[in-house]
Length: 332
Image (cartoon, rainbow, N blue to C red):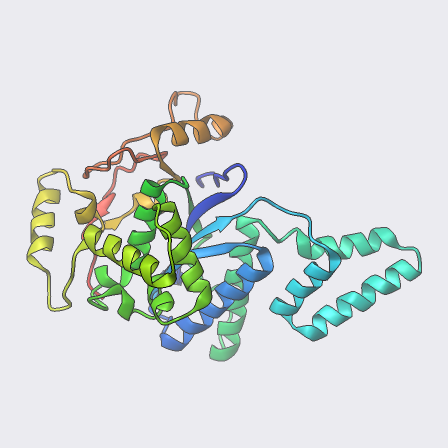
């Protein structure tokens, strides 16, 4: 049975994850770059802000904000169509709109615009477009057919507070470090932090958004230093040459069923961050639970669940995972 897709009210943050079919290592450097470009292009079309992300060989993570839907002018819609589909498509749409109106077919003109605007400011439509467009592109290049992805994408609704949002952002930006690919997240080109350090304006805007939630202000130099300090304060350093002493200590604590600090948790694979359905304070999780009460069994009385194996502070999830919710990652 599928877990219901939990959608927030108004502008909301989400962590989304997709895996390659059979978890094959199909995303080499070139494919990661193509996925990154697709992610950015579709985000601009949909009016969605990517805060940070990580693309690895067989899966990806995206932390994004879906703003409240706003009405766009026809010129703005055509501009977004140009950005995603090109000038030829945008010109064809403009001509078709003019033709409909000249002949008094105003409902057809409205329907044509709606065929584009209904895919904007919508989480499911955004992820669907990314997955489909990248699959079609990949299949053409590699002479293959069929789906590229293991299943529908996973999403978790994240409270827009400093604690919840920054914890999720750090977890995503440290993916390549946990996998043993790099020792420093800035060295990994295919994550939000690494792309921002390399100078990409969209990536910097996402990191600045996270820094602002953390209460930081100033120019990019100051904000990037604050975010970097936060990353390393949370997770320390890592080495590709086998497990660190810290990892051995973490494994010992996990084996004993003990509690880990948040910094130690960010060295681990934490399924709560992809399977917890909702992440935030107890009040936030309970509020979302009540607004989606019909999605859960009658025996369930409360929504918030305290995650296991860690000192999570005030953070709660909506799903209580029982099987390996926190494990050490397998080095890439």
